[in-house]
Image (cartoon, rainbow, N blue to C red; front, top):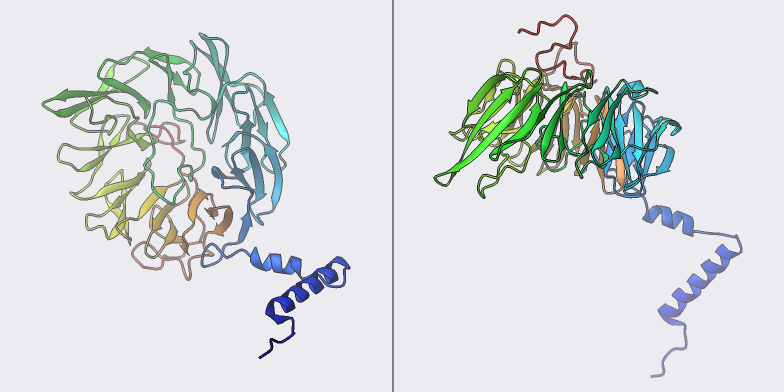
Length: 478
């Protein structure tokens, strides 16, 4: 039988494509923009849906809520977006960026790698408020900005600024700086945060500056009073020691190897007088590795507290100021997050997360969670990340009231007074507290709170000092 002489399927497809191209080229009909929009259509990154969702130019390195803006740091640039709508407000080329200040006083600090100096930008407009051409390192806090500049290898000056200030509050001399002191927030001798998957390490944003800071310089530790700039101590650690400045004290952490084990001892010293104020033996602060008990890491903790392991294997939270045991967990429990007021603990049965009050040790709330759930504490909310199914939950740390409950595989990137930013890949979105709970706000035990529940996070819980001495009307002796 003779074959047909028709065009066939391929021929008709080619003819149809040619017709569409001709129509698009002549302006008669162009389906391609609509087709591209359909292919590129964004899928919501959570359920309930976020207030807004935007695709940025690259995967963010950090995200911070600064007043009414969201500051997004990427590999070679930084941008700010409206907190209300997610629209881009400005963009700058920068190798690093950080946020100092809080609320209406927030600023964005930007700079270039291996280039001295930095700029302080308004987070809403991107306008330069102050420029520095000499600093080699910057540290950013909620209430202070520090920078270091060096005119010689052993001649450096540390300066403190209000975030929006135009003149330094004080300056202090440092005999050099560590080779690692470059760009923004290089490591100081303090605590390292407990971290977890799906919650960014910087989710809490900038915190209040501690009363004392420890600067590593040529194997020694220089202890600086952040209120006056006075250098209180210049100490070289012993062979078995690691030094850390926590809770207004200079801590001497000793780890000695004996009989195949590491034996630990900790003592707190008042840097102003040099007197020992407390000591505790047997608490492993996880500063040493298994090879000869060499201490290469800062202790775990936050603000004025430390997290370690007691000789019987239970985890403990210690006050860095006076060495008190603020919390000792039960066997099998694990501390997931901590600040000056609370600790979030995974229970021994691995079936829930429990909030403990450090001042009294009492349980504030419990919440069911999977055995791989992670958590973080911020000034405005406790965040719990769960799996199978994937969830992000924001809670009032004091009573467990739900601020946001999201069915999502996205990460928690930043938490602010009224909501949080989540992200997955290049997509970021803003969740408003009280608008994504899937129903009325509930406490951590499943109950509905009373009239006090507003759907807004509590106010920031900045440290008032190791003994609340910086809070009006407080009694430092308590």
